[in-house]
Amino acid sequence: MHFLWPQFLWLMAALPVLVLLYVLLLRRKKKLAVRYASLSIVKEAMGTRQFRRHIPPLLFLLAMAAMLLAAARPVAVVTLPSNQQTIILAMDVSGSMRATDVQPNRLVAAQNAAKAFIQELPRHVKVGIVAFAGSAQVAQLPTVNREDLVTAIDRFQLQRATATGNAIVISLATLFPDQGIDLAAMQTGRERPRGTAIDSDRKEKKEVAPVAPGSFSSAAIIMLTDGQRTTGVDPLEAAKLASERGVRVYTVGIGTVDGETIGFEGWSMRVRLDEETLKAISNKTAAEYFYAGTAADLKKVYSTLSSKLTVEKKETEVSALLAMAAAALALLSAGLSLFWFNRIL
Image (tube, rainbow, N blue to C red; front, top):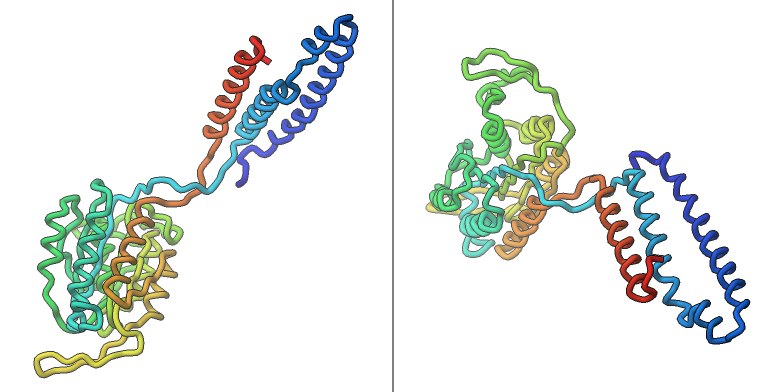
């Protein structure tokens, strides 16, 4: 915790002074009480329940402390509902996803986990689907219609090759349709100067200034893959594009890390999960990497991502909370004093 106006903390020095004044008042009251001739009157004046009479002043002191802390405008890291509005699910549909090391196979397990993830999200969150293999395409534009999303996921068709970089670029182009993110130009090495956006007529517009990685809290990308890039844009270059726009790219690896030969209908292919690159993508974009070795692991990963994307920890001024606590303590102090002693303090 830190304070926006720390200079006001010196007011806390008034609290020991209040305690000292309270002690002096008690001693004065005791001296006045012993002047009475009747011992019963003395006990009544001094109070027969010594501990109870100190509770209201103690609560009032705590209320004063909370008010003085609120005046210094404290800032703390708190967990709040996320303002995430759009999530892009980029899902690998390469031929290796038919492997059965994840039951019933990698693709079906991924589809089931993705559909469960979508159902757990708040209804106001838009979700888009990008399917990628040797190329990447938008299977479903961002929408809040869960039925359309499930239909898009069920329509996946397996293809050859893996273009993880293309998946990130297409996801970004979907999130920022007005920024002129050009996948074809990046693939042919004719990428426009970084940070430059174009309009629909391909005219240059104002420069898009890079922001801090992970600072764009209105959208995120979740990319699931079981292999390493075999074609398309360098995924680390694509990750840099996301990082400059503040978009987090969470990566989920599924399958065999050491590599495995998969055969199907007379042909075979060697697949290997490139964890190093997936971790680099998530690190570059201030996100996280998850490994899912089984269908249960994959569901657990998506459940974790759901909780991460629906709440977020961030620095927030908590002066209002302290002021509310101070008011509650002051009211409690006055209420107890009236109930026990028929007076306020």
